[in-house]
Length: 279
Image 1 (spheres, rainbow, N blue to C red):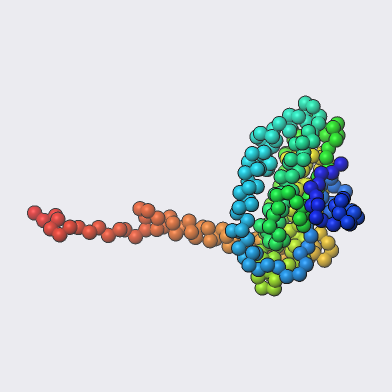
Image 2 (tube, rainbow, N blue to C red):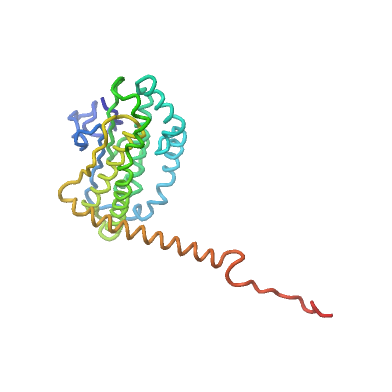
């Protein structure tokens, strides 16, 4: 079984004139599927330029929900994450309401992330799928190992290192997309595919080690179309350069503060009142 929030206005949804099922997102058989519709046509340069500001209100909503539920990379250690581990360990089941709520939060977060990384221009909705498709298979009772949740975080160590490198490449792709939209109004398909593929890898890791919805180990596979694979090296190079520039700017600002901060740098001139110090 899968959990997926559907938009009633989207073609292919039961109850609409078009009852033809939409094509499932690519996933290669893994019980987590993630895809984003490629934005055909010109992009909105104005909203892309101010994207870090425009995303703030909806990001605050998302952060508040995640903080309340513990739906994050550290959520396994506190609150609902720990409760889920204990439920699987002692009862061997994944409560369906918990699953549905956690999937909803991940879908909501995916829409916010796609908007922030300028892959799409639609403002993130709180209750409709839009152009971002994320599905998790529900683990039926008795299908999950009771002891595996205790060590999944450790088994994922190789993925953490790979994701660090891929995240640099994804950041580079996002920078390239931003500049391409500013100058051409279009989205480079190769860089777009990289951003989606890296997110898919991260969601597989999340499902295995933190959401605990599957015991199938995430594959070391970046699902890229053949035409987009040549862009990954360029994306990593751009990401490394971008990261280095940010680090250098930050170090320069810290250096200026240390040099000219309070009590440092040039001495403050002392004005002595007239006649002071005279015998």
